[in-house]
Image 1 (cartoon, rainbow, N blue to C red):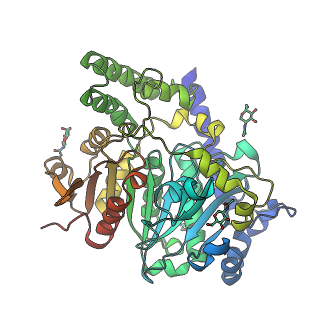
Image 2: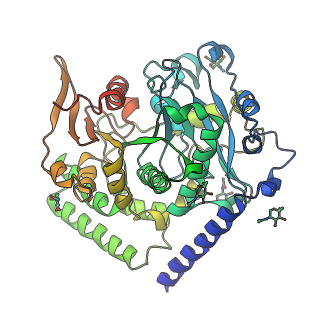
Length: 466
Ligand SMILES: *[C@@H]1O[C@H](CO)[C@@H](O)[C@H](O)[C@H]1NC(C)=O
Ligand SMILES: *[C@@H]1O[C@H](CO)[C@@H](O)[C@H](O)[C@H]1NC(C)=O
Ligand SMILES: *[C@@H]1O[C@H](CO)[C@@H](O)[C@H](O)[C@H]1NC(C)=O
Ligand SMILES: *[C@@H]1O[C@H](CO)[C@@H](O)[C@H](O)[C@H]1NC(C)=O
Ligand SMILES: *[C@@H]1O[C@H](CO)[C@@H](O)[C@H](O)[C@H]1NC(C)=O
């Protein structure tokens, strides 16, 4: 019975997907833009090739910080049938005219990518000491080596929304990939200078699904002249890209740090394998994300204060980002109008991702590893996606250099007075473990993380292969 419901859901989603793609070419169907909405919708301008106006209108004015920061924000319409609009905030590099574009996606599911901006590597950071809950300029930002666009994904997250409300939510890989792909096509029309500079897609945690799926979609369209996207590579932090293997290996880290007994490790592993079997048989459809996740990460019985960083015990602070993004001044600056809600994390949406939890992007990852540059990093204090989990997924990813990766040896990344981490370099694949960091890696180790992405960009990894 449950199997049937699962199948029906897939059918319904597929139908919406097909319907929306055929409408996407119908320019006159953008009648859904509410005329009384004071948000900035850029798609009508992009459609008319009025790029200059789109760029001017999307400029962000942040008071005193204007002299130091150039940025653009607004909405791009990614599903014209449903009226799905993705919110973005884009920071061009002011360090280099040649800096490639990095698109950044947070995970969750349903966590706003403004967390990436304010909590990890954007040019602005949460600053509670000086201003209450406010922001100031960040010292170690990835905007410099890269131009970065932070995108709230999927619709229902952050400021991204659907005009049909929850009916517009994209709950499957095909669904959210469709929306993200349409975003990328239009973004390159609005900022064509990036066509010759290279494109990276980055993200963390649950974005371990979004990023390879989107990169794979771009790969399949690589010979399509009307969709010429200069994909150079992907960057993944603590990625949850193969839940079946990673969720079993979750218990290895807890056992290694002594948080659970050998007996419990074996018992929990068996439990997860049973859950996965149930998923394969189609029986997991009715469970919410939190119901599944409570079991997968032992939420109720774990003695650790935070899954993000088991040493500091500090999680990312969603409330501060919520406060900053929803202030009237910020709404005005980033062109989102006055009426819409902002969700640093949308629990109602994430709850509906239960059926997506066990869906793997390992097959897509294998294609990406064979065709593009890939950086996968994680912090060694990360519990929720530990090194053991990522290795379990990687060792079972069937790409052309799998054997070589299996047999690779880690190199030490350090300075005379400090251990920064460990890395290996296989083909175009750079694997890094950042020492002293948790799940929010660049927040915990800003300078090492910046050095890491620069190394990846300019020489392939922390150090070139010798
Ligand atoms: C295009 O949109 C118009 C107006 O909404 C509609 O009447 C027409 O049927 C649409 N055409 C296609 C091919 O979808
Ligand atoms: C927040 O920070 C900005 C930029 O530093 C500053 O102009 C503004 O006055 C601050 N707001 C508050 C409420 O402190
Ligand atoms: C090529 O890309 C355009 C724009 O995304 C799309 O409409 C078209 O269907 C693609 N062609 C093929 C053969 O996939
Ligand atoms: C979340 O779902 C509950 C129950 O359906 C509903 O009452 C509430 O308004 C929803 N919250 C948001 C922010 O959509
Ligand atoms: C890589 O290692 C994994 C785990 O031991 C193993 O299952 C897989 O067959 C190995 N693959 C190759 C090509 O050596």
